Length: 277
Ligand code: NDP
Image (tube, rainbow, N blue to C red; front, side, top):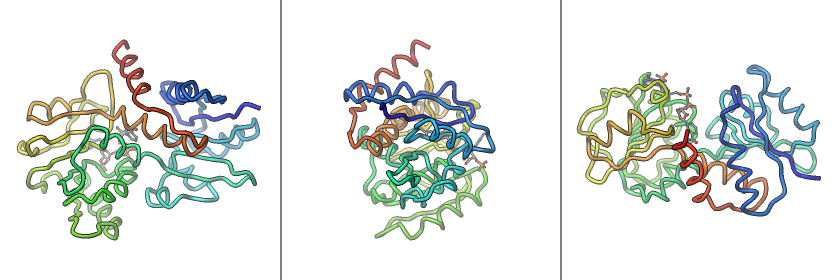
């Protein structure tokens, strides 16, 4: 019987995940089906149970279900426990439900592809929501010299810095606060807010970037986001989150299928499709 996978969200119609995973399967000559499924906003468990009854074996989980999926699973990976969210579900042979998160490793793989400054670098991350919580552990594992979290609600940024203080290892300065408190230049600035969705830009100081800095927006769109345009005007190299999306998908695929797809051609295809509208 063909293995069945899905992505759950609400809304879900515009998800790129079915296209990405079907492309991976085609590339690897793997036999599986992958569909987009809508679940009730307040009852992800019902949507998942229905899928399992139909033979579903694993799924990706996107907004707004990452926390509900976290609560539903029987076994959490250490990184999902840290992130407080699950984006990948796997049904074990004995019916146990495993939960993992691949968003963080998706970001760091994409940053490595871009040869972004990581080890020994000064990194600024904007936002303190679910996406930022999910990427802090893998970013800290790259041993930056400093990691500063800035957020509109400053208390959320300082709480995150406290939660992850035990992972700073040797000499990484981890701090969180308001945009007004940002000081100094950064080699890597990651926008993990949803401000770009509404065409907004957090209030950032003008002299934010070191020479050759990379500005990375976790959001992606056909056109550069307002953050990318702002950063580009100030001399930074810019990139959006399309690569992160494809990399997190590849890591989920690996968890399910124990095969690693090539991500470059799939990211190129998505980029072409975005440009064509
Ligand atoms: P959350 O709702 O959990 O957090 C939103 C964050 O954005 C908060 O820090 C919030 O600040 C901040 N924010 C929202 N609007 C503004 C604004 N106008 N000005 C300044 N700050 C603002 O969202 P997520 O963390 O889940 O997602 C954040 C972004 O990351 C989204 O754009 C999402 O698409 C993207 N993402 C991309 C992925 C990829 O694979 N490329 C994967 C996951 C997420 P406050 O706390 O003050 O409200």
